[in-house]
Amino acid sequence: MSSDVSHKHAIPRHVAIIMDGNGRWARARHLPRTEGHRQGVHATRAAVRFCASRGVEALTLFAFSSENWRRPAGEVNTLMGLFVTALEKELPELESRNIRVRFIGERENFSGKLRSRIDEAERRTAGNTGMHLVIAVSYGGRWDIVCATRRLAEQAAAGSLEPGSITAEMLDAGLSTAGLPEPDLFIRTGGERRLSNFLLWQLAYTELFFSDVLWPDFDASELEAAFGFFARRERRFGRTGEQVSRERA
Ligand code: FPP
Image (cartoon, rainbow, N blue to C red; front, side, top):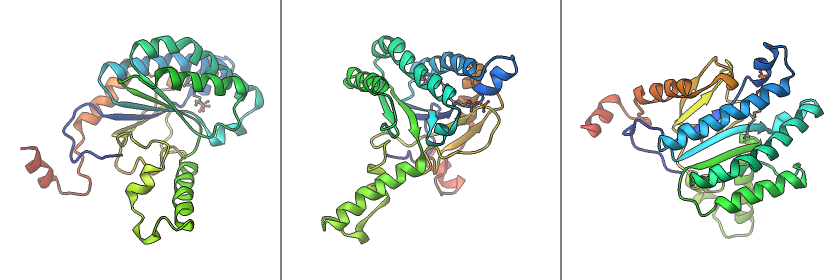
């Protein structure tokens, strides 16, 4: 991953979103929580269209965390079913928009059906050159860091890597987001102000935008507000404001 020196672009290169609040959206309407997730799919589609049309290079969506397996079985099944259906339904549009799909997370626990849909979506969009759509399912930031660390430890144990020569870039290259720019803008909807084990390493310098709006209601105007917030930030990456201004001039 590479980090831009200062904030020269008003448009974030990589946007990462925790789509929170589906359950509360449904409860407020006396509907089952699963109905909130169904509505959440519409907001997800709108976010993909918005980001692709703005020239965002990568959009990473937290669809299901490692911890979400603890939810009631019925809700987990509905969510897994929604992912299968959404992939079937949305794939033609993703293909026509030149979007590249990548799933990150532990796939071992998925049904064979979901795994084959994921493989198909990744395979059919692999040659595309537009926005990367990264969908985090059964994903945890600590898991990601552990996997990358394990790979380096294996190389060190095999004698092909000197432990003292390990760099942040090497660890970065072993993460599931390898090859993508660092997230510039993080958005969490639904009122909580936590990272909840999302892209822990990758969010080191990211601008954080928290919204009280519940995910099913997070439409283009809300995204516009998040992008506006980002455009007003000065990104210093550890330097002084004066240094940044000088480089901009
Ligand atoms: C959090 O809301 C949301 C989820 C755990 C699921 C997110 C999934 C979607 C938006 C479905 C569409 C995704 C794709 C990739 C097709 P919550 O249930 O934690 O809400 P609450 O905090 O109000 O209970």
